[in-house]
Length: 194
Image 1: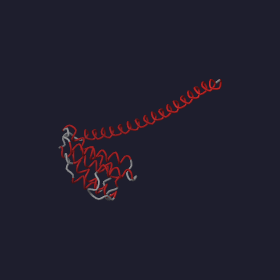
Image 2: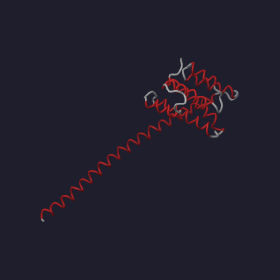
Image 3: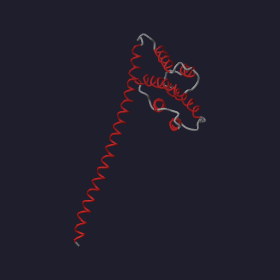
Image 4: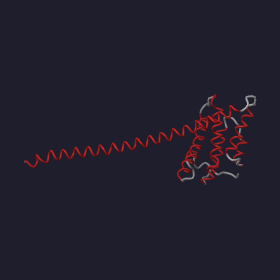
């Protein structure tokens, strides 16, 4: 009987120590998860800032253009900026020269990018949708994070133009955004000759 009385407080103490150990271990795991989430949040914030900077630069370039120029000249200037950004790539230049600077541009650009991506991945037309192509390119390690960002930007903007009524105030900037995303993406896809 005396042995049971000694074991009981000892066992209780062991359980308390064990519970404290597990709580400390869980607290450490949660602390590490919080730290990881903070790092990811910081990375996303930096990415957002980069996009905002890119948009700010685009707006500055647009504002620097003469107000006396016709809209057609501004559109051509934006196309020329995109072509220079893509390194004056002949295949990209032809796509840009042939595309109309209107609500159909995001759809046309995605179609051209999709053809290039299909060739790069050796996937037949109509086998997969654009999102699935992007995922395969990522999974095969053929597309880096920057290229993936541009591809998803083009995809998202194309979907906005294809499935919703685009606000007249943002239409021009969205079209420019797609055009510039395609220009920045093109060197990552390695489509066509220089």
